[in-house]
Length: 272
Image 1: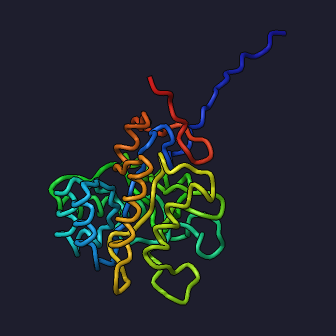
Image 2: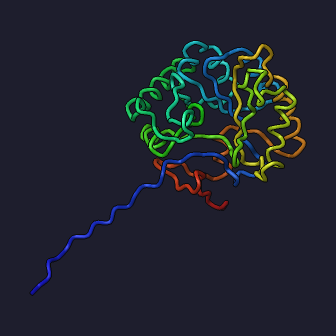
């Protein structure tokens, strides 16, 4: 008896949407990134510091910030900084804050996230006269594969900051309560960033540093901390660049869709 012919379909799952945490192949370059949401105190002065040092950074802007402080966003763009998307209202996208699990919150879905990102892109374009870059950063660093995939459908690539177990390359400039153990002055803040490599064995070359453009503190600490960081990284032979430039230097192809990742990091091609 003849056996029936069975059709066989092989379904290949797409790799998870890219989450850029570092670009080791970029060599002696690192990315300075600043998030901008509600606080604007010290923002203009910080941009002046970067201008004086001829440093270009990536600034992730919320739609709220772009709407309420369009002049600051225009100034940043005019100075050559790369402007990225940071959602409109800076919502918690996952349950991390309550259970330390990056489960999508019940009120968050594809339509919700994409609306946040589209409205922000429109606000940024209204402020600077052109669309933002294709890079975005999830508020509070809360995201997962589904969230990154929804953003990727709009052509956006998630950019995190460099991390190590139990720590991250975060200046902690956002901590504004002196009673908290993580509160620190400008010099301690700079030492925290500069000592990351020694603490964890993670090179600053190829790294992505998290800071904030505006401050809720009476004396914005980054006005002092950033020059200290730039002086020392310059002494070490490291140069600050935008995320886009870091990706280019590391020969990372973002393509039109997902890039292969391992452990949340891109699989980097070899230099030609």
